[in-house]
Image 1: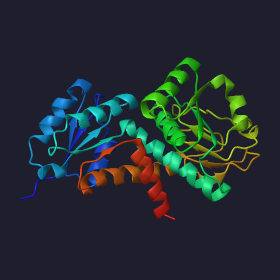
Image 2: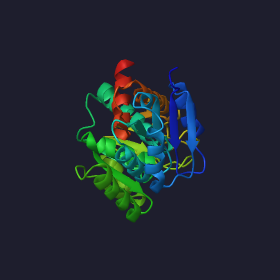
Image 3: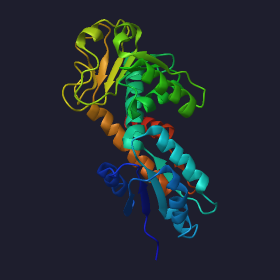
Image 4: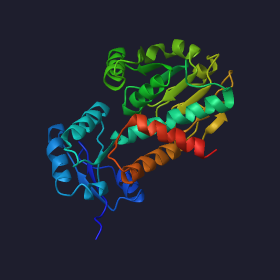
Length: 302
């Protein structure tokens, strides 16, 4: 009898995300086993318990999902999990803390689509503001965009924190090969004047970009908001917006709302969870892979 598909789902939080459990089961995993309040130091023991309880053949039906709420911690846990493998005893691992990696990938891929289709250009060389960008989604979106050639600035209420997060993006996630900048929220009125793209990734229910600021930008092209809770994070961009013109814009900018982004995020997470099952060799998945499949989904849906 073939062994069931088992996904061991690890989180540093007190609860495992029901969203992630539903996604795992819908993607083909038969059992989603939760491990909560996991300490990073426990990763090696948990991983090796999982890999040594099945034969190498059975391990093709075994996977590990890493959740939590901290991007660096999730990436560190992914690296620790990979290090704990003892080939041929090895399983696929997928990190997506708070869904941040797949959400960010969906947002950046949607923005790229609009740049190509509406403005005949790409992310390369574009000036991007990540408003409320110190959180997990903002961090991942900044790194993905910078790796695609954009000039990214993370905007936070406190410049010191924004700079710390920008340094984290550059050194930890960008391997020192990107240069994400930082800025204070108090100065966004100046930054928006030369922005091509805006990401709104702050707390739900807070307007981060007003109609007045939108009107002040002479080159704004796309504004994307991951907030589905009114009021919108970006004035004039509701949750259903999917490339619609922003009324306040004088530069012909279009908006992308949370539900449009969420659909691509869903597809990206679903495809990565399936990839864990379908690949012959173990894979180690994170934000870069999420962006790849988000792009692929957009191309395939044209």
